[in-house]
Picture 1 (spheres, rainbow, N blue to C red):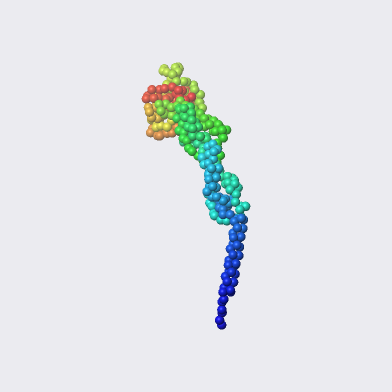
Picture 2 (picture 1 turned 60 degrees about the horizontal axis):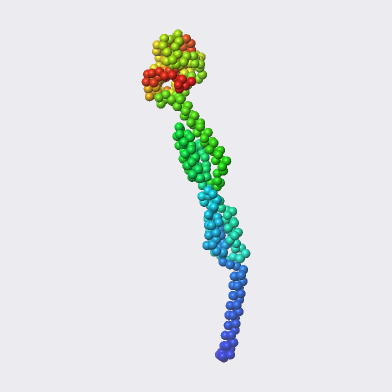
Length: 324
């Protein structure tokens, strides 16, 4: 079979194809136009793991976040905490794109983190939080000047909190730390009063007792000034070491009767006389508060009592300078 194409049929076919192409082009343009009117290129914004909206210009949006959120002008804000922001390019309905709404959602999910300065002692029992480094330094200087006797070891530590420190809480904490340092100062002063040549008398020799003869007194029972302190109490009352030491004497000694002498170092010795019984031996190491003997009336004595002496390098001193 033979097909014969004449010039008229070729022209017809060509025109038909051109018309079809024109229709397709116009259709594509119309579809693209509709898409461009309805949709626009944008970025889906995700905060942490939650998508919070769409923005049109990523660069401008990042600048807005930086200027309006991350650069907080509130006093003492160290930085703004914000979950990681990520972006994904896509075409979306124009009505969904709103930089303002996304910025507000970012603000809602941001947190101001404040610089707070902790002033504390090394044992960290006493703590004050203040809002500025200058205030912390001033507080440390004031406390060190006021309590220079105990030389408080204070340090400043920078902390980051979600809330600033209120003036009320600062005042309360300052009062608390002052009260604590007052107690430590009083404790030191009392300790100093009870320290003999560097030896701290941590315990009283008796729990109770009545002073019946003071240091230096002259009485008919003796022909010399009293070299110690007499403390009357009931027979058998425990006698305690006033400080850590070593037993130097534990036995009968002339007018002292049963006598215990403790050596504490630095030339300091303590005497415990007229004991009914002795609980330690020479060379024994004792701690302050240990029971070393019991009250009696042995030796040159007129009744149950403890004769207590403190000697420094062999010379007796008034016990009441340090205890009782």
